[in-house]
Length: 251
Image 1 (cartoon, helix red, strand yellow):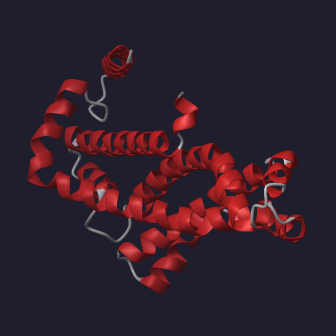
Image 2 (cartoon, helix red, strand yellow; image 1 turned 180 degrees about the horizontal axis):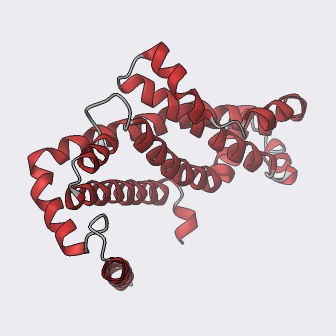
C-alpha cells in the first residue's frame, strides 16, 4: 500500500511537471519573444550555470529563507497560543493587530537597510516582520477554536497548565500552524526575491536581475527555475516534518 501511494504520487508529480512545461512551451511559441524562451533552452542553461555559481546563490537564498522562517515561528507561535487562550489579552491586542497587519511592511525595506545595512541580517529581519503577523494571527485563531470541553476533561484528570498546552492546545493547533508555515514560506521567498534585487551580490533575486540586465534570458529563467525548485524542496520539507510531528493526520 505504501509503495502504491508513493508510485501514484510520483506519477501525479510527473504529469503536473509535464503539463507545466507544455503550457510554458505553448505560450513561448505563441509570443515568439526572446524574453520568454522555450523550456529546453532554459533547462539547458540551468544545468550549465548551476555548477558554475548558481548553486551558491541557491544556498544563500535558502539560508535566508529558513532562518527567517525559523525565527518567525519561534516568535509568533508561542505568542499566538498565549493570546488565543487569554481572552482579555486578545480583546486588547486584536485591534492593534488588525491595524498593523494590513500595513505593507515591504515599505520598511529602506529603513531596515539604513539601520542594519545590506547584509543577511536586514533581509532576514524584513522577512520575519512580514511573516510574523501571518503566523501569529493563524495560531491565535487556532488556539481560540480549541473546544472548552477538551480542556475541562484534561483538567478533571489533574492536568497542570503546562500539560494542557502540551497535550491539548499545541496538538490541536499544529495543523493550522503548518498551514501558516506553508503560506509564510511562499511569502518569505517572494519578499526575499524583492529584497535581493537591491544592493547585494548574492542570492537568487540578485542572479535573476543581473542576468536580466545582461539580456541573457535563458540564464534568467535558469534562476527562475532555481527559485521554483527551492520553493518546491522547502514545501516538501515542511510536509515531511508535518508527517513526523502530526502522524494522526495520516492514519
